[in-house]
Amino acid sequence: MIHFPERAAFEAALHTLPSPDHLAIEAAAARQGQLTKPPGSLGRLEDIALFMAGWQRTARPRIDTIRAAVFAGNHGVAAQGVSAFPPAVTAQMVANFHAGGAAINALARACGAALCVVPLDLDRPTGDISIEAAMSEAECLEALNAGAAVVRANIDLLFVGEMGIGNTTPATALCAQAFGGRASDWVGRGSGVNDAGIARKEQAVTRALALHGAACDGPFEMLRRLGGREIAAIAGAILAARMEGVPVLLDGFICCAAIAPLAATAPAFTDHCLAAHCSAEGGHARLLEHLRLRPLLHLDMRLGEGSGAAVAAQIVRCALATHNEMATFAEASVSGAL
Ligand SMILES: Cc1cc2ncn([C@H]3O[C@H](COP(=O)(O)O)[C@@H](O)[C@H]3O)c2cc1C
Ligand SMILES: O=C(O)c1cccnc1
Image 1 (cartoon, rainbow, N blue to C red):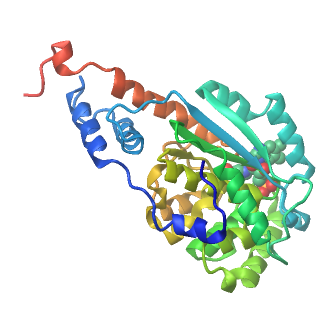
Image 2 (cartoon, rainbow, N blue to C red; image 1 turned 90 degrees about the vertical axis):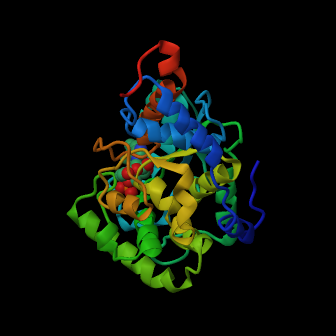
């Protein structure tokens, strides 16, 4: 299991990222060329099969074990009136996850993912980023490691989600800090705030950037000052997945914002990630461009929890079903191209 004993270990890992197995990708591409279909006719399903082959280091990638992890945290900045819902909803939704009644429960069942729910100190909201750092160094490290702890090398596909009332506000701040621009370039309605709420959110993010911007000298400091526990946990999980060679399906705005500091430092960071969907949240399309990822789906979803990733996991299943189960031209005695 991956563990980051200190901040330096987390940042060093970003400079020694493993690459996919190019021989496995070539072998998988050769197989794709022999299957009973015109070359390229399965479009991005073929790309997904090659992606999975590269990270699983085999020409015949599998999808027996899908792990979904939902991290939950509470945010001091919620006190600024940046969400349409009260902070108590975070813990209430965690209870709903445990009871099996949330969207992610239904969607994880539908795609055959084993779901784990990881509440992170819900009784202790992080610091309000508009007036102080979200976390101490120890708290941030603990959250990163809580994320890394859900990853095992034998997982075929990982996706992560989050629950945290107010968390689109730190997510917005992380995007602006990592990739530039003003709060207004990245802000959106989150759980459904009205115009006055958007104005408060923009102001909170602008204050946070002015307060912390100059001190954000790397990805750890960005996550510590501007993030939150569930956001740092997502970053830790996705980095640990890379270190273990586990491919990842990214979910919506918050999930992608969590890795913005990592991708801004190491642009190849997202190589082991597929973007499940483009959320309806204002800044997500722009964020995906900065992450150099093309989303698989546009379903106007804006929920989080890993919900979009769970839907896209079915597409990954379809990609591997065709890749592994189709007959070749020779096996089926079908004539090849003229
Ligand atoms: C009942 C409920 C379930 C949710 N599940 C995910 N979110 C999503 O909404 C929150 C972010 O939006 P904001 O920044 O506006 O608070 C996060 O918890 C996110 O996961 C939910 C929100 C609510 C209200
Ligand atoms: O894109 C998301 O994941 C999202 C958007 C709004 C609220 N919660 C999550």
